Image 1 (cartoon, helix red, strand yellow):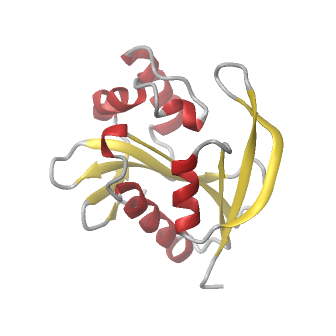
Image 2 (image 1 turned 180 degrees about the horizontal axis):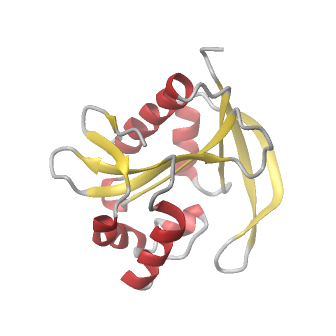
Length: 175
């Protein structure tokens, strides 16, 4: 998998050695619920999720601060399970609350979008979020994603609540 670089960040494959950093941000009450997952209860749970979702998976990068080497989140371009077309990938992201509001996620998302269109030659990138996730919507809108509509009763969250998804698409400027 390609490692990507920005001014402040290294976007690289997630490794087993990232366990402590991932647990640190995934165990807080405000990160996971906005993305649909419950805060991690312990390191064993984080390890299991890492094995299922991150390790040796194509298209998911750890967001690492160049300055310190600390992994503070993840960003991915993965298959969009709501679309049956390989020319579209879905972007998703999560980051430690400690780093919110510093433009870090915008920097990571910009690089992943660039790579998606230039490196992977995608025709479009999709994004979904819960209607209440204002921070995620702000990033989506910042990059010019087009609002497609609301998919009602789209996703069952960890707590059993069934929520709508706001649906967005960004078409390639290259094609």
